[in-house]
Image 1 (cartoon, rainbow, N blue to C red):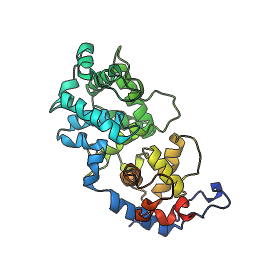
Image 2: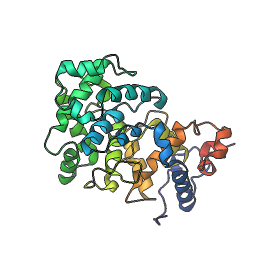
Image 3: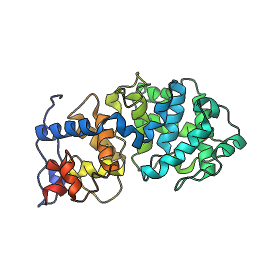
Image 4: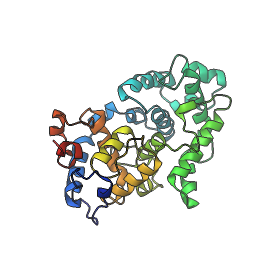
Length: 300
């Protein structure tokens, strides 16, 4: 385990009667235990990452990764079947299938497919936009490389990438599936896609070797946000997580692994996806590696 200076906790933000955040060594050991417990290949079947992992060619992994991450909101069990049907239609090479879609072809591929805020015409816009964006010289990775080269962040590069997808969709609007500029949200799905493409650990895809893992930002979903607050890594709050929360959590985790702080994301999210953490004290807490430092569990 890497050695680092003491972690910066958010003790001053906790209620007066809340347990104090654990010391650095204790939290570091428990984060590593959580990583060992949940960062496993068998967990991938309960994760949208399972779809891009089915392909071997880089361009197919990029296309499949952007599509799968775009649907990664709400209940995992609800959107995985939608993606399963969509990838059956896209065939053995998603990149080739969507490379030069007409509007009618995109609508035919998306017919009858929708999930929560996304209707079939939004899915069609997503497919057409990704196909058009992928034809840009350098592909999707070039947006992130260019942003870092200009001294901007990976988040700025992802925003450029999302804009290119929306432009490429033409008259078809991808809607909620592609984040709009100027929103205060954490851009979780775009950061998730980037994590998949950059990190190389046997689970993530590791296709974009030129982008350092140290530049990534945590894909902040409700599970990761809740668990991080229970651990005192970021301040408690009632509202939905935003980009500032994601950046703050990334910095907090960088104390434990400065070269790859986002490596904890898969494990922390699957503590929630699995149902082991609901934010309430329960029998499941006894099996959670993080329960010794969880503020909810410690109060009971």
